[in-house]
Image (cartoon, rainbow, N blue to C red; front, top):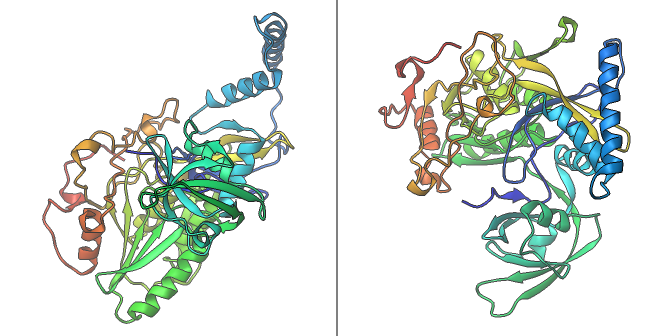
Length: 462
């Protein structure tokens, strides 16, 4: 199985860069993922600063001694800045899987992702057999206007061979300032000779919401990530589908959060609020009791109380789990699919001037009923498994938070691993989607398609 298709120029991580703003996400990736919730804070500021002990300063002196010895005596002259970055990152990654150091470039990339727009060409690409392959050009972008097609293979970028580059490196080469140009060499099956195309980069907006009508009267809304465009995109999708189907004819809504790694906390709160009239959505609790924050719904259900099914799987993490947990606890939606990832911690994004930023775990988050899903995930109300192709069996399961080395432990709680993240490319074979449509149509299926939680084998205590 090739690397996951990448909406060109993005990777699924980010932070809303404003004071005390939160983010939740299944973390840094172009083809892989982990999970994150974050807030921005000022570096080394505020009354919670704790004085270091004399022993701590002695250990810092030890670090200085080791650094100096390596700097002067290592067999080859080391890169001192890289040594310091590695030491800082080593300190952070030793805490948990989601704390880390971002250099200036990684920090900028993260900001780009959360904004949901960037300077680029507008193509979704993947990697197959070491080659960069176009999955689809995004409508009304430089790539679409230049005539790039699905399955085109990009062999050169600005006269440099693509062979040998990672997907990340190829994406970086195609991104750039708006109005700058890039030359691509394309191999196309229908063309005997390579095709040279010069494109001018433009502002590309990532659309995190996709929607369509299912079964004639079911509104299907897919959220691929939680960036700054998500809530507005979802609200527009609800309006569009209501107009297409008719408000009085809609049987219900399917909110598809499968393989959604997360994103901005404020977007997760607004998406949840769209389906709720009242009540708590999520709370975050830090090291000190006074750090607790609670987020509540405001009056106004955009779907007018229509039935909702939320689809989740092993790739649904963080912000996705907040939405699923809130709607499940309020009994506003039926959660269907397989157990989610289980990422229940909050990271703070701490800018370091022009030297990047820290991503530091500072809190856990809790669903409205007060449960933490850390290393447990959201258990669906109705479990529906997919028919996984033989060649993918064993590769479709995510480790889940519980499978990550150094993850935060839950006291007196049994942990649960990940589940399958496989979604068939053919909707006609998507048992979870089919079951959701049938559920909203009131059609009862047997255990082969869906198992209500009450009929499942006894699970470990939550």
